[in-house]
Image (cartoon, rainbow, N blue to C red; front, side):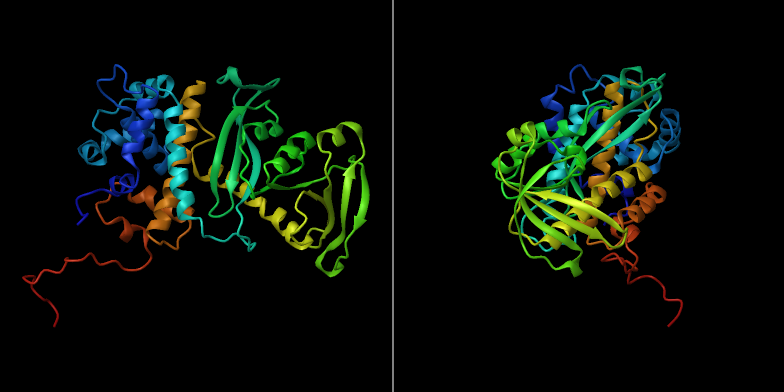
Length: 388
């Protein structure tokens, strides 16, 4: 019977605490700590994400108002704004980055059988990056433009379940294509990317993996057509060609054959040119795969709207990365709970419910379900019956 545990405590029970301790030990996170452990810090920041707190002072006020419940929420130390600010500033952000990767691994296993619109047995990834704007006067280390600061979130997303597989946080000036240098390509997988990743030398590494890619060609790319395959123009495919690169440096970077598909997008009345090293999938499927790449764009839009990653509680690089990684952990945690409890509600709805029931003492499934929930053993035979 969970009537004595708060919603927050039940939610945190889904976190593998032993894995968190390993992450802390890996970076000596408990060195010379007597109070306010890394786990306390994580719980406070998780509370801030789930309840949309605006500042450290806001976090402190809300948690102190529920002082009698903190122990049952797992927070063993008194919450102070200065203590939390110092923890975010000095405790290694890689603790929370590694723990987020642990949760990502768990979530990917849960969503491995999900569909994303294209019936394929192989794993399909989408690559993209988004910029998070920062105030230059508060974040001078993140100078991006003359009067603007920024960081960039590079993301590799598994389209089954919309779970980010790899996230790298860099300076805003780092070009998107550099993200390819940090990836170990999975044999047989398909990688979807826009024209920002069009570097033929790097794309050839995907072919040697061996893996597949689908991207778009730039208007200044010059090709030599070797031969064409028949197409059904009613599907929107205008041409399907096997080509090689002509220009010296592109051909040196990618000496093999490529497949060039010209496609007419009827919905937006646009003509698109796709490049891929996959010669077996049909041209309409290639076009449909590239359209699925927009799921990573929706992921960026979702986390910016529903998580606290645009307003930060600290101004140092360590504090910023700590907050972002804990926010990602909460996103993945909610996805894990959704799957394990077999919930039909969207992640947004689940977050909204959690934000207003966080201190309630009721079963988590009851709070998140649309159906009436009756806890086993809740009937009392000695209770008087008012209506027969």
